Length: 338
Image (cartoon, rainbow, N blue to C red; front, side, top):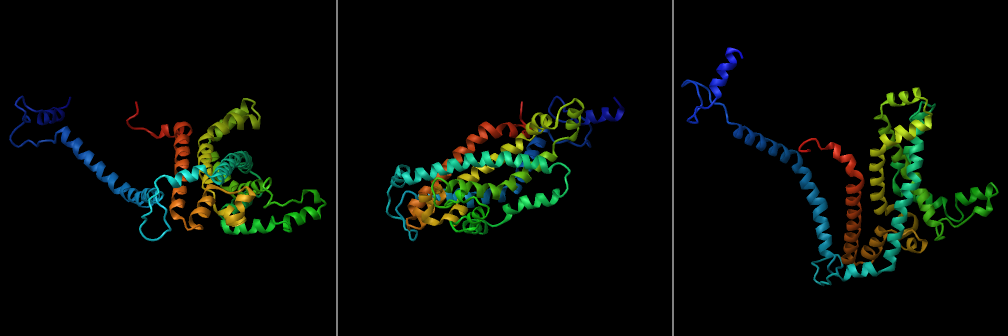
């Protein structure tokens, strides 16, 4: 130990009486407890400053509206004035006993499953294709992503015109000699839900492709080179290297797709309108809420439907987070983990 180090130790080491050793002019260093307390206050101030505005916005625009919707759901309310006709849980009982709501719930479940089945594999194949060096790759990426940025109003209006009985789709099928395939794409209950799935897949597969392409960029190329040296084929490398490493991106996309499918409203409302969707077999919980809440001037009932939709989405989101996404978020915890 050097002389200077020895002097510092003498200056900061407390005497048996609890006073720091050294002469009368020695500098007193802050105790470890005081330094820790000061650091904690600084961290608390930083967290409050950075997260405070976000917390305020979340409470104001998410928590408070949900609480107000739950409150109005206990009333028979026309949408103006203070609600006074308290009906308790009657709105919720009516929702859970309504077969129309059951149909809408089943349609949402079908859309959730088929969105994953139809968009997931197609997006993975397209992302793998566009991740290779091919001519016109940038143009193809843009063309695939364009439907996602087009407004739902434009998409719904365009598809509703093309899928009419005398629309462009049936006209094209007739033109090429496939008159047997001419059907009522929008009104037949056995076909309308599949028409909706085709439209949803066409519009949202571009988002999944872009997301998967971003995930593919994070996979080291050296792994594929090592697999090629070991004699693995292209598809063996994709199955054993690419897909496992793309897992976190796939799980995040699946979560976003599930939540979006549960809240689907605009395309159904634009294409099938407010009254046809139920008979065509394409109604969703959101269209049910608007039809029986706002359009019926029964805002108390509509708020109750919104609360039910929120609770269903919340349970699915928490379950997915607990059993699927947890493996991806555990790695982000770097402090306090044993």
